[in-house]
Image 1 (cartoon, one colour):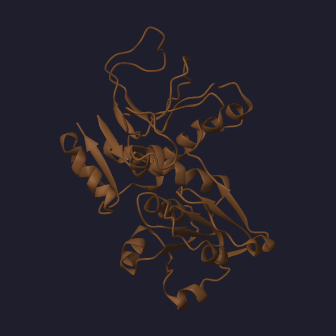
Image 2 (cartoon, one colour; image 1 turned 90 degrees about the vertical axis):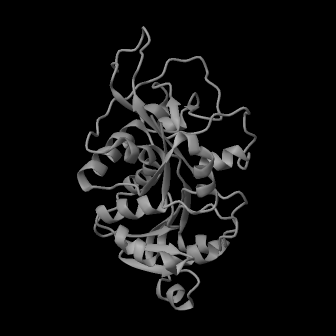
Image 3 (spheres, rainbow, N blue to C red; image 1 turned 135 degrees about the vertical axis):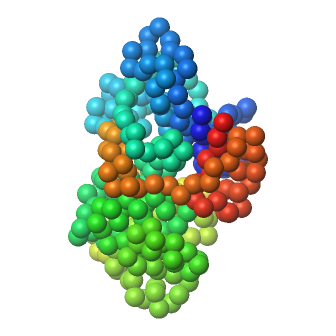
Length: 294
């Protein structure tokens, strides 16, 4: 079994977003093989390779489920820091044999969370997309947008990530601390996908990079309230959030990843060294996802 440790796990360990239901078993990008099946299981067989993202249940009957937004189902159950509501799940079967189990792990949440909003906004050859933050989420977002043939601008506080951003597929690199870059990229992006969860983000700069009628999409979840200048909205700039993806999004994401060779950059760590893996993520040393392996 392979299990991926993420920034979300760290936030949950520390009750950063909301009180955690301790004791909590973390990890929500999991790939393994079926060893046993219950009497009601019809979709999977012993030996099948299966994956679990950040959600394990939706009712399958409500308006949100029927419109492909199972992640917004009122009866949803998340993989961790949640309580099972005594309901039978709605299984989804999909295949992506071209993708290794270790590489598939991060795709089940980080990959899905960055792919789904780009899909919803119909990103394509005429799109100009900024990816803010080049880390566990951002390095996948750059690849998705680039393979969708968008003009991609990687946005970072660290010029040291320039070469990696270009290697991942970025067309441009914007150093947010460089005044020349800040001026050059003013009102240049149709969409900015923000993967950062920093509480010190200067949102006025990010909003200024977005074209009139453009959109700021929040994937990372800052711990502090956002300070966004009201005048940005006078240019019809929109701000929206995004929460993982639905079952069809998962299928589309895995199919796209297999076809276009989108893969996470991973470091495999034995499960017995889980604490070392957590330290690597906590200290920002992971490049870019840590996969724990049994």
